[in-house]
Image 1 (cartoon, rainbow, N blue to C red):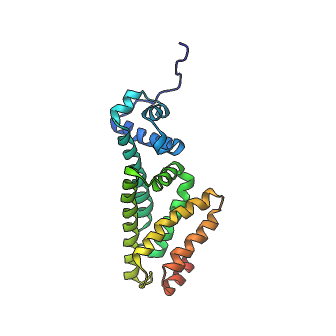
Image 2: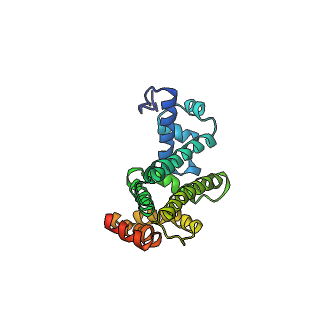
Image 3: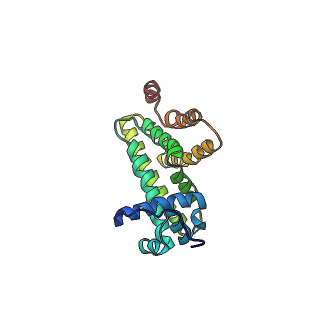
Length: 213
C-alpha cells in the first residue's frame, strides 16, 4: 500500500520491560527534540509503537515527562552520586569522583545529560518545581559527604556547607560547558580538582589526596 510505514516495530516485551523501553526512548527523544516540543505522536513514532500503546502506558504527556525525568534523577543521584560517595574515599576525593563520573556521562549517557541540562534551565511551571526537588536532593547528598569529611578531618572545618553544596552542584554546568566547547578531560579534571581538593580539603588532607590521586 502506498505510504505504508515499513519501519520495524518494537518487539514483544513484558509490560514492565515495555514501560522501561518507552522511558528510555522518551529520554532520547526529549534530548533530540526538547522536552517542551515533543508530542505523544512523536514519542510513539520514535519508539516504533502504535500511538494507542503510548497512551495505554502513559495516558498524558505529563506522565511520560515525569517518568523520563524520574529516571534521569535516579541515574544522577543513585548511579553517579551515591555510586561514588562510599566511605572508602576521603570526602574531597569522593566529590571529585562524582563530578568526573558526571563528566564521563556526557560521553556515555549524553541523552541523559542533555535532558538534565534543559530541565535545569526550565525556570517556569512544573518542570522547574520538579527540578528543584532534584537540586535539593543533590545538595543533600553532597552535604552528607562534606559532613563526613569534617568529622574525619579531610574537609576544612570552617567551610560553609550550604555554600559548598551550591558550588559543587553548580559545577555540573561548568563541566557541561567545558565539554561541549571542546575542553579535554584533562582540562575538566584540573578544574574539578581545584574545587574538590584545593577548596574543600584541609591542608593535611590535600597532601594525602594529591599523593593518592
